[in-house]
Length: 264
Image 1 (cartoon, rainbow, N blue to C red):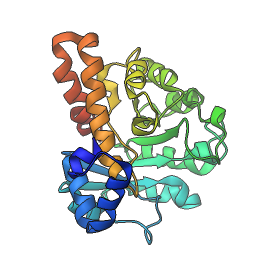
Image 2: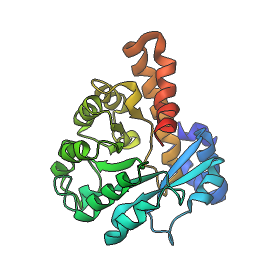
Image 3: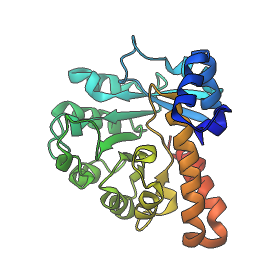
Image 4: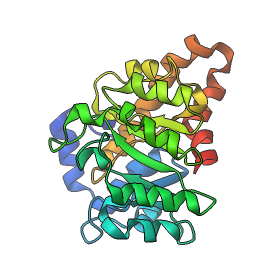
C-alpha cells in the first residue's frame, strides 16, 4: 500500500531508498495530503517544541487546519491556571498522560485541579486521556480506562475522550455506552496492532457509532499518518455494512469526520 502510494517497488528497501532520495518536506507533505485530512489536533507535549514540527507547520504540510491540544503534565502545578484560559488561547482540547505518571487509578492532584478549573469555565474543553498500551514506562493494568469511572462521574459536564485503549477496547466501549460524556478512539491501536478490524468490531460491540472517533496518534513518521487513514477506512468498510447495513456510509462519515467536528 505504501509502495503503491510512493510509486516504487513493493519492497522495504525500495521504500526506504525512495524516502532517502526525496526532499523531507515534500515527502511528508505528499503522505499527509494523501490522507485527505480536514483538521489535525496536535498534542503540544510530544515531541518537545524545540525538537518537533509546530502545529502551524504541520498544518501547512498537510494542507489543512491544525489546532493544539494542551498536555496537562507538562504544566505541573500551573495546569489549572493554564486550563482556565486554554480555550481563549486557541486550544481545542486538554490531554492527560496520567497512565504514565502512576496510573489511571491515581490521577495526580494537579490534573484533578485542572479538570476542576476546566469545568469552572462553564464551557469545558474535551479532555483526552491516554489509556491502554504505550511505552515501557507504564504499568499496563493501571492504564485500564475503567479506573476513570469516578472522574467521569465527578466531571459530568466534561467530555472525556479515551485514546488508544488496546487491550481495553471493550472496557472503553462500555464506558462510552453508559456515560454520555465519554468517547473513544483507536489511535495507536490502528495502525500498530495487527488486526484493526477486530479492534473496530470490539469498540462497536457496545459503543454507538456516534461515540467512536478516527485518530492516528501519528508523530514524527509521516508514513503512520497515511497508513492509519488507509487502514481505518479499510476496516470500517469491512465492519460497518454487516453492523448497520445501508447506513454504513453515513456511519463511516460520522466516525471519520462528523463526531470529531461536533466534539471539538
